[in-house]
Length: 368
Image (tube, rainbow, N blue to C red):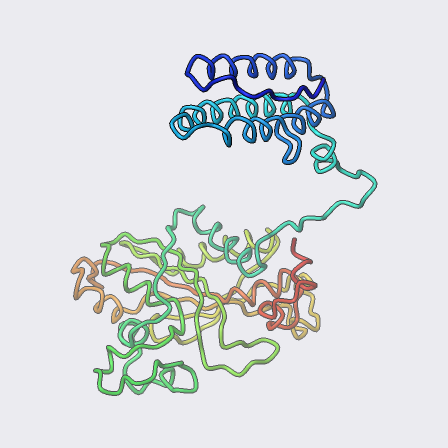
C-alpha cells in the first residue's frame, strides 16, 4: 500500500466534498478487503488512524483547517462519517484473526501445577443433626424450629418448671440483662433446650402432632472436654390418642438402630424431668465394644445417650389454654431429647467437644 499524499480541495461545495470523501472511502475499502493477517491490519491502522502520519490526520490538516467558516460544518460531518467507516473496517479486520497479544493472554501453560479448589462439606455437627432428623422424618415426623431468644414462659413455665425450680438457677441459664421490671414470664433468655418449640407447636396445631426439633441451645456451663456453653439438641414430640410408653420405646429403639446399627440394644432407666411423667434415661449397648465392657463405657457395656418420657398432663394444660383439644383426659404423648455433640463424638471418635467449635481446618478436613 502506498502512502499517497492528500491533495488540497479545489473548492468546498457539497459536490466537491462528496466526491472527495467518496474517493477516499473507495480507497480505504479496497485496502481493507486485502487484509489477511494481524500484521497487515496493524499496518492499515497506522496508515489511516496513526497519530502522527495517519491519512485522517492529513485530511484534517489540509481540508478542515483550511476550510472557510461556512464550509466547516458540512466538511466536519463528512469527516466524522468517514472516520467511523475506517474504524468499522479496522474492527472487522481485527476480529477475523486474534492478535498475538490476545493469543498470549489466553494461553495456558499446561506444565504449571493446577490450582486446587477445596470442596466444601457439612460440618460434623450439622451432618449428625441432619442424620438424626432424617431418621424421624422417615417415621412421619415434621421438623419444627423456633427462636433461640425465648421468654421465661415458653422456656420454663409452660414446660412445668415453676418459679424457684433448680433449673432456673443463674448458673444454668443465660438471661438477657436489664429486664427486672418485666413480669417473670415475659423476661428474655437464651433457651436452655428446644422444648419451647413443643409448646409453640401445640398452641398453633391441634393433635395429632409428630414433630422433631433440631437447634442450638445455651447454658452457663464451664467449658471442659464434654461440656460447652453452646451446643445442639434434637427433641421430639408425639401427641395423639392412646399413645403409650411402648410407642416411645419402639420409636427410640428404631432410631438408635438406624443411627448406630441394627445390633445396638436399648434399655430404659427411671429418671426425672419436670415436663414428663413417667420419665426415663435411655442407654444403648456400647458401640465400641459391642456391650462387652471397655474404657469408653466404663466397663459397663452401656452408654447413656438421651432422656425421654410421657408428656406431663400439666404441660398439656398449658397448651389447652390456646388449643382446648389438648385435654389430658383425652390425649397422651411422649417427648424425648438428645445432645447432637454427644452423638457426633461417639460416631466420629472425637474426645474433645471444643474441637467442633475451634474452626481448625486440620480437624474439620477429616470430615470432607
